[in-house]
Image (cartoon, rainbow, N blue to C red):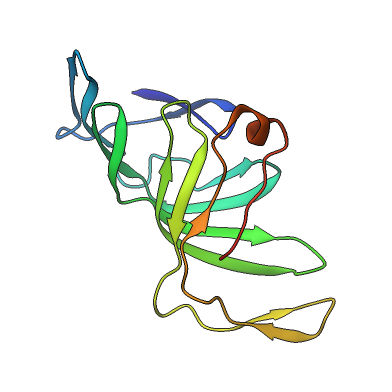
Amino acid sequence: MADSMIGGTPNITWQITGRSKYYIRYAGVSGIHEAVPHTFPSTLYIYGYKFDFSNYGLSYLDSQVTNSRTYGDVTIPYPSQHVQNFDELKFDCLGALTSAKVPANDGAHKLAYWNGDFLHPGHPVSCGTTPAFRARAGLRLG
């Protein structure tokens, strides 16, 4: 079993795969951190947003995330009222969200209040990692 803190949400428990391994070196922790399919919580509320996960996996080198196999979507509430898909969601060593990619096949989203389409420009989704940002966490597209 593994126990994680993501986006300030503590005690997220799930089962780790047999290929999950960790090495502690002077430069930091390196290894693979991966959930057995369907054991990572499918829905979490992070920074007040509803996140749905279809897969959770990360690789670390010197305590830095180098690759992510974390996929899913986040529900953006009214006035936007749409679901934004993401690939390769990354976290810092304290569990704060740092970045994600918008899938290439993610089409336009209808924004409820404005009754208009939103087409993501293809830039990575970014999240701040400073202590000040964590205190008022949010998401930025583009």
